[in-house]
Length: 449
Image 1 (tube, rainbow, N blue to C red):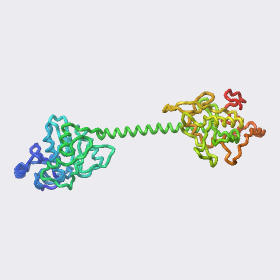
Image 2: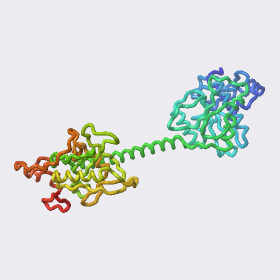
Image 3: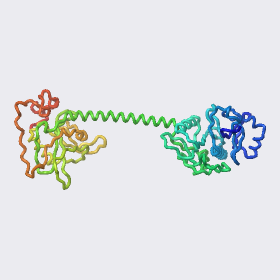
Image 4: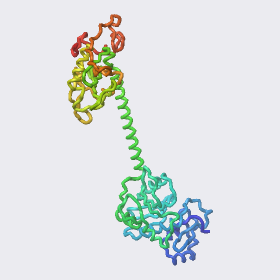
């Protein structure tokens, strides 16, 4: 007799009997009265026995556990003492009263201590959770209280592991192995840690402030948080898909642009203008994204302050440039012009003009189509593959002697006449050449150098 779960309430002829409302004398009288045989536990209906442990712990136990098939959950002396401390503190706040072990009308669940306003318009469900509990259980039970218009507060001995979905937790440091004071009210002096209410650092001050002022819980219910997380995840996934499609379209544009580019050397043969300066110039033949007319764009680079080239460098095209750029300097323009004369190029060179970026409105020197004045974005130019570039001007690193005068293009081989120097195929079958008129076909934009 009297084994199993420790509870603080029982029912006597339909009325609640609360162990926390009794002192030592009245409890002893209840234990000896004839009423004790008619008391039952509210959740399972099993006969209840008033018991006592130590000087201050009064509780009810099952007369026989064999006749109970309900899941009460075991409660320690520490659990009972903390529930009694909560009850005493709540009852001392004007306009509020405590209901210990408040059962839901469905009898499916019981609140350790319900703080209810006297006008029945507000309620706080205090749960003493000294045993481990899974995050899903915290979420499930908290949502249940929110849906019942109750604000849940979990009293735990230590901080929980961080979770995406938050529940209102108060850390007290009081656990299942802590010493139980003779007077449960002493537990109201426990130091607390919580992040949803500006209150004193003690448990009693926290409870009083919570009931008087209300909470400042900003995370919402677990369901609202889960919905918000899902919406954020869906939004991130949608944004990632948009970004993927944009990148895919960008990659396609870059690939198409590269397919329409060729190195000057492949089109006109190797013609490198040797210069006395330390500036290397590379060129590529590309076409306008708007009118599809061909043009020559170029990139230039110096070795750096007080440095010299040890070997012929490879092109390293910048993705961003400022409002001034080396490619627009007079000596570089002269080198490009000299190459066009030497190579007898019938492809005009691009124009460099000041333009503004679309995203930030930043001023920069851009290559511009000589035919339709469309801007050739520097980002796209920087994505032209290295094999589409070739050196058109630079110092002679092999000998210290001045460079020789560029030789004119050799006469065309009759066996290859009518063939494209880019693709080595008959011009009528060359897609690159067919789509790009030449002076011989009456193109008004091109003038032979």
